[in-house]
Each structure stands twice: as C-alpha cells, then as structure tokens.
Image (cartoon, rainbow, N blue to C red; front, side, top):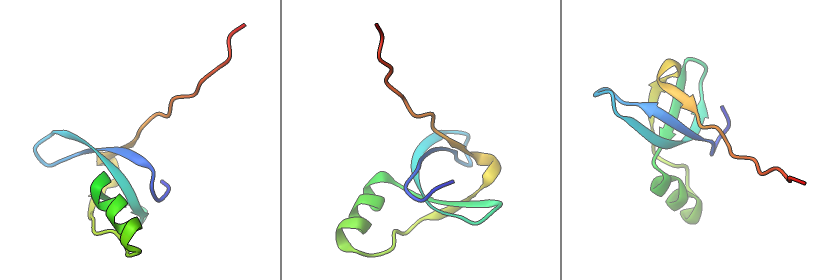
Length: 69
C-alpha cells in the first residue's frame, strides 16, 4: 500500500474506519486519520499513527470517470 492512500481499517470493536496509510511494513500497515495526515503535511512533520495487521486493512476502490458516447 502506498503512503497517503485511503484505506478502510477494521478496528478492534469491528467498526470500519477510513484512514490514510503512513507506512507499509509488510504484515503491518501504519495508518492515521485524515486530519492528522493533513496537519503533518502542513507542519512538515511525520504523521503520528498506529499499526494494524494487513488482514484488517482494505484499500478503498477509486472511482474512475469514463466518457460515454
């Protein structure tokens, strides 16, 4: 997974959350909130995040626009 990519994370209680990838460490994906990701960019610092098992992280599908006609 790529840094900055939006993902869906299954938290301990089973809820699904939208997060941003900070790092892909193989079996662990480190993520943070959108707010933290943007604040870190503005402040020119690394974002603070938490690691989740790869099995609990799913890449969000991106929408693509197609031309009809």
